[in-house]
Image 1 (cartoon, rainbow over the protein chains, first blue to last red):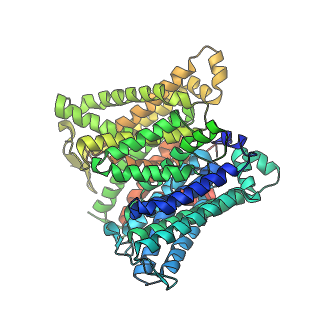
Image 2 (cartoon, chains in turn yellow, purple):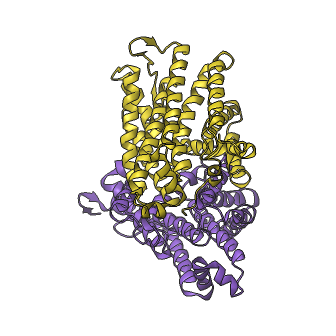
Image 3 (cartoon, rainbow over the protein chains, first blue to last red):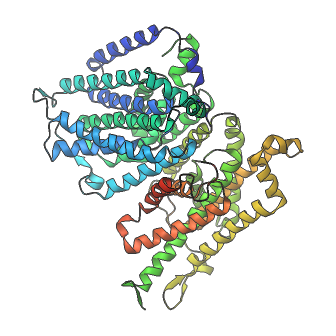
Length: 322
Length: 295
């Protein structure tokens, strides 16, 4: 139970981080050029999910905790941001802040309950808590039930930039997502992050070394939930919509798939995974329920054949960190 | 007709009955999960999908082969249980040395594949399945009307649950099973084929889910998504009960069904969420679960 999910990655920990810097530079260049070639709304959607998947990866990749309920934070932050922007007429920065804050509080509560059990129980508890909040979202008045909250105004960022302009919105999303990405990178390479990895590798050992692992796990969970909430808040402004899809368990499953496909515990895995899964969902949408079948098959293939994920496999072959 | 706490007895006992029915399914499904978890140390995420397959097997047999409810009650669990055995041989046996989370991810993927395939084939709307002729109608108990089929479901699931408990806790085969749960290597050294036992256990757990599906077919509509929402509630039931004890799974399943039914009478808004709330409270007060041995 205490065995880590992705030990091979650790083997390369000592090697130079030059590969990471190069990959980061390549990613930034690609994302700056991309909107001239690719439909920007698709890119913005994918970027929100990149942040969501990176936040999720913080938990599963570096603490070894698998949450099957991350839609709870993504979806509720999305609702709160949409409500704040539309009904309270808050500017976008404050709307996003309120959504993210709510996700943080929910993360503390859900995390506090879930870390009381380990392993697969943890997955079941997070899933059940998320389902409970799904029913609340279905019943609550402010969420608009089946209709969701539509026509959310994007507003003017800091009163200066009109986010109704696609280019401004893209730059805003890109900056926030990259900031979130760097923050997560900073967290996993801090002394705090090292303790998280110690807990992943052997929790009892970490306890015997005097670490209060419960607290570390709770903080990691809350951080992950907060960043997932930030992603959800951004998403509701990009699409100007918050709906039940965002809180449904299938959303939790999607983010697990993105991270698994890209590579658990890799820095860039969730980025690649999020782009692939969102692209697949968009391009295969006309085939209806086959998307579900294909996603399921990818899960099976990942678990059986390449558990390191795409980025993890590449990093392993090239003996670098990615 | 009389009233209890200002609620007409008909409504109260009607919901109590519905709660017992739901409880029967919770008990059967969480029992299957507990049995599988004991031997394979994985949480079978596909359990809901396999329950749905059971219901569809009954529906398709009636529709295309003219096989009625009674034979389906036996054939569907065997058929779906056999697919479970194939799944275990093809996939799950390769995961034995890995972190149990991979089993969860794999069975989650399988659940998506199965649900997607059935949605493609049958759409998302429910299909009706008739109550078998012999169990139509019902009887008036004075304080409530009891439909025969619902009484049958409760009696049958109780019988199946208790028989499973007896087989595992009180027979020789069950003792092998329990021994293999504790120490598979030692049990193999005594010449017992543990891998085959694991495979059959998975098939049996899946068969239990399919049996619940057949029983549910005449009560709920048969639909591809009937399993996915139910399984999440069953997960909460499992967290509340803890998977250490077979009897614990059965008792928790029925008890939570009844509590859910009563909530529908006294506080209908909370009926969807009451089990999750109870789960949260149990986690706060008794983190290992009511009957749990492993945390």
